[in-house]
Length: 121
Image (cartoon, rainbow, N blue to C red; front, side):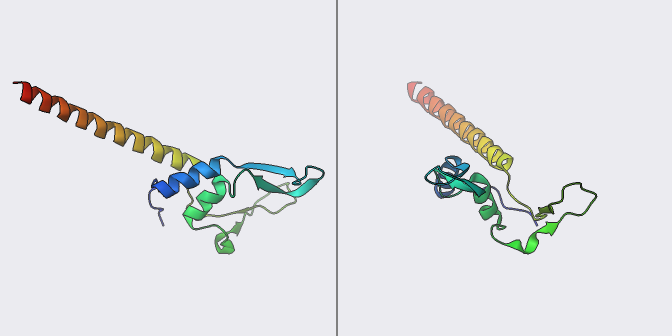
């Protein structure tokens, strides 16, 4: 299975911008105790959570597999072998979009220059 291109519509960009404002803390809301589990602050979700949602793997434990091997860590390690978007996928999609828009702007600028030259001649 292959994922579709990273979404870059206005809603997706707003979701990305929101997720980039997130921070993780182990402090309680009043800052008096340290929590056992991290919590997200300054946003409703993190970038990783958003990418899991876009990938269709968020809150779907069916694809999670326990990693087997000779590990010294006493805690079991799990991973999800299904395709998932990464922050690098987002960056590459944004870079490609910027390049596409620049190329489009250059073509339009050349077209405008040609139009101006033709009207002067």
